[in-house]
Image 1 (cartoon, rainbow, N blue to C red):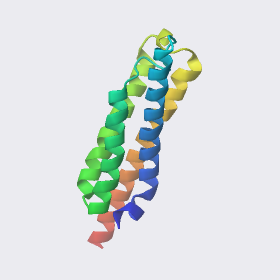
Image 2 (image 1 turned 180 degrees about the vertical axis):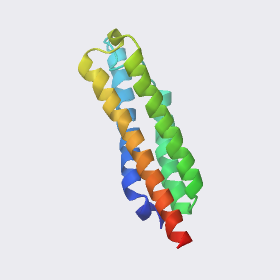
Image 3 (image 1 turned 135 degrees about the vertical axis):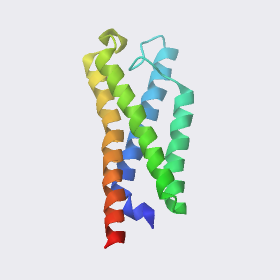
Length: 131
């Protein structure tokens, strides 16, 4: 089953989406308390999108839709990359401290690691089929 083949990439990708969801919930809660969010944005809509993304990661693998899974992995990695880029280029005052700025980059780096591991598995599987 593909869930076993892609277990390690899936763990990174689900960790990224889950931690990003927690980050957004925390940000929304902090904003409701009159405090600054952990980063420049905080949204419950994002939390819902991330929950759907996790579900789609799992369903596509269980159904055997490997290429669709790879496309979703790319979408997650793209979102993570854009967020890291924003953390490097936006005004640092948008974060409560440098710690939270770098913590956000670390969380989003998980998406990139997951994607690159998925690409590795994808091409390893192609090599096995050719032999």
